[in-house]
Length: 224
Image (cartoon, rainbow, N blue to C red; front, top):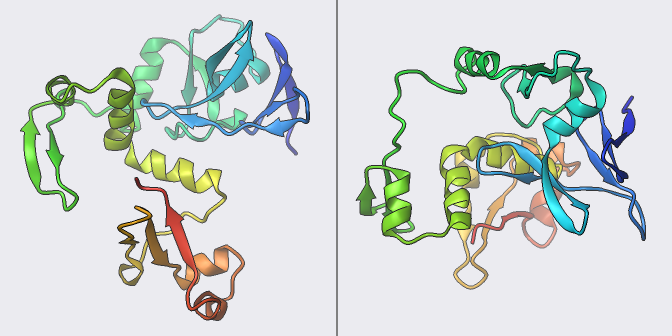
């Protein structure tokens, strides 16, 4: 059973112990869609005091459902999955415990250079301009802070991006078979592919209907 409580500082919003946020503002209440930030954590935007403020989903859940008598400053994901914001997966901790847990779970590898070599490439991945680090690439390519954040998220947390997208659209998380490779349309700039039998079943389609209706059923990714 999913339990809901008001967010402490704003009664226009409620948070559930499953990690979902609901807006009660008129015209009708609705579940808010979260955003995935550059560091791989989920956040939602709450309208408060005339501005939209970003709030981490895991902190909202912890602040609402988990007592913190020791006034610990950080919230840890027990299974290491920053997209699992269920109350049972969260705990209050200090910075040291959070760091040690990240090392033990492999979220923060040790003895790994902090600089990540990157490159500007063409569509096929052929290197056009290599750089020793992401920061140097951002500087030389004159990218702004928003573009830098986008790069950090897409390049360093690709699996979290995929999981977040699949969950947002209630799509099954299944590996893509080799015979279902996406193809890109030059005009729409979108990618299309066939659904596998497993994906079709997970979405409630019969595999035969996937191939019969209008020839094929396609799943679209907005990869612009």
